[in-house]
Length: 248
Length: 298
Image (cartoon, rainbow over all chains, first blue to last red; front, side):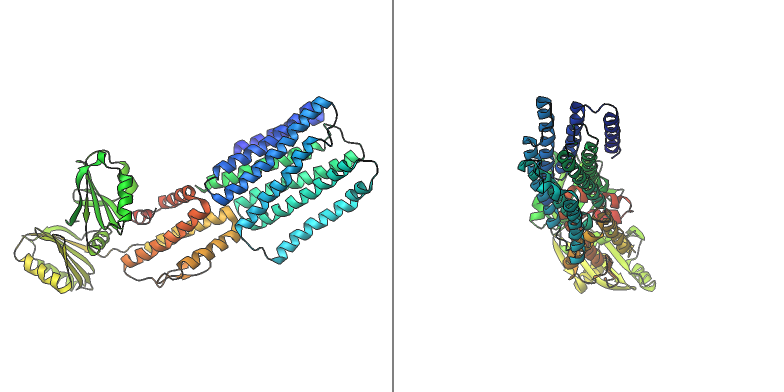
């Protein structure tokens, strides 16, 4: 895991320096593509490591597919921004990102179902309540205002609302897994992946607010939240693979 | 230790012409009981089978057997001959038992040892263990407990005689022919300790990987798999083995059955490769003959 930790630290250090010194759209978009690729590559390697195990391999194949769609979104964003020379929102990149949500949710929920563990109604309700409270706060502080706003298009409204809601759904499933695996090395891996999704939800929320207020520009420091999310997912996926290696 | 002749299943054949994996599979399917003997000229190695499963594997050096893992024996074989011999289960059991015992007397010749005096001396010492005799006409085994004979076997030309008949033949033949006598005290083996170490090692690795909740679920499945095994009770993430039979042979069989259940579940959960590697790592921390006894399960 030393190599993966090294890559993660080096990447984040480079990203912070670039965002602080020279946040040119080409560079920052390229960083986003690299970060998404790292997460996708780690998930593929884990899938390949687990492919002999039927249920687990399906989960990791779906997770890899979901992260590939995220990578597709980042790549399209880079291409469109280079071509159009403006922030490509909404655009075809959003189709790729949005398509990633049901796939990722299916992966996480399938893993939870596969493990066939009853967490008990108290824990399940607790997790659901936590996610619902976070959703209510999001809606109350920001999303409702966006929904009733006349200043942005219906497509933008739809996207601004869908991303945070999708993030909450992913968080719910990821939290369930964290509880099931709690105390084990695989649990640590799922915690890191969940942290990645939490960072995505903060980033999506901030993006919704900034685009609504027309304060977002390509290379905005808020992008670092997505990059960090990708890196957490990269480390989490790698840790999962290494957990099995350490077993032997 | 003496390897008696039974019914020939495979005549000696060049090892290079044999696909050992297919041979082992065929023996497993036929539920073969007996042994395969590999003779390379320098080494003589034997794999003992019971109902198609490998029971013990050993190589002979200066007439004394040394236990090894079957895989270790097989990978060293490049030339020489292999033959297969069928034996009655009682004889296979006896060989398997003797392989774990250290002889008190080894290959005493009947020309200077009086067998009746030897038995009287063992009786006086309240000896528990085995007496093995090898003659031209075959092999004899007496199992003794507290100085008295408990069972007797005579095996010759594929025929097995048990009990009083066998004992009678022993005394009759001993007065007429030369014999080589070996005496083996009952071995005290830490079978239960070794099993607990392996089982706990597997479970602890599983908990470390998947956490307590999934370990408890796995334990439930393991418990239901072994709840009908004689002498075994299921506690909280551990087996209670106080009621196991005293006889090491029966004890070994029960503990191996438990370990097989545990390994089957682990293979399903962690995959075959990971389970094998983990189990081999745990075996590496054990001493002979426990390493070979539990290693044979894989």
